[in-house]
Amino acid sequence: MPNTTKILLLEVTDIELLDRICRNDDAHAFQALYLRYWERLYVDAFHKVHSREDASDLVQDLFVALWEKRGTLQVQTTLATYLHAALKNRILNYFKHQAVRDKHIPGVSDAFRVEPETACEAVIRRELHVNIDEEITSMPDKMRRVFLLSRNNELTANQIASKLSISEQTVRNHITAALKRLRCRLQHR
Image (tube, rainbow, N blue to C red; front, top):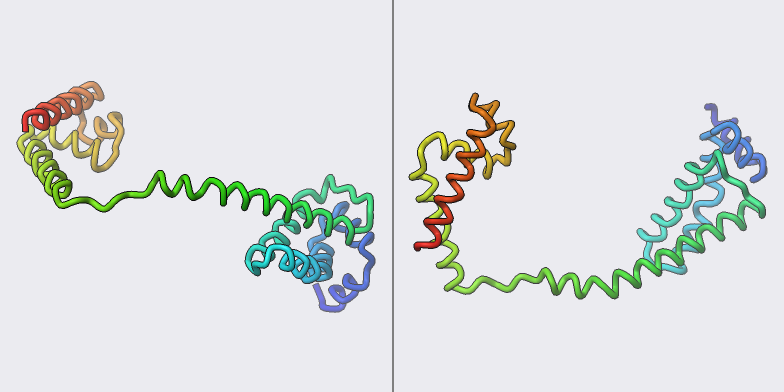
C-alpha cells in the first residue's frame, strides 16, 4: 500500500475506520486506528498500573480483542469512549488478578519450598540409588531392557513391544517382575 493511502487513512474519521475494519476486515484501517489510539491508551494504562510492560500488554490485548471481535463489534458511543471503557475494564481485571495472585502466591510458594537436604538424607538417597542400580544391573537382560525403556525412555508397553519384537503382555510381565524385584530388594536393605 503506498504511503499516500496510509496518510489518507489517518485523515478518515473513527466511524469510517471502524466501518472498514468491521465490514471489510481492512487491516490498514485497523493499523491507522491502532496508531491513532495506542499512545493515549498506553499513557492512561501506565498511570494506573505503573508498569510499562503491563500497560503495554493491556493495550495490546485490547487491540487484539478489538480485531478478533471485528465481525460482531457494536460500538454505541464514540470509539474513543468505547476504547477507554474497554481499557478501564481490562485494568480492573488486572488489579483483581493481581490481588488474587498476591493473596495466594505466598501460600503456594511455602507449600513448594524445599528444605536443604541433610547429610543423613543425602547418604540415604545415595544408598537407595546404589541399591536400585545394583538390582537393575542384576536383572535378566530382556527384563532390564524392558524396564529401562519403560522408566528411562518413558515408552509405552506397545512401543516397547514393537521395538523389541515381543508381545505387550510380555512387556507388562517383565515390568511387573522388575518392580517386584526392586520392592523386595528395598524392603530387605
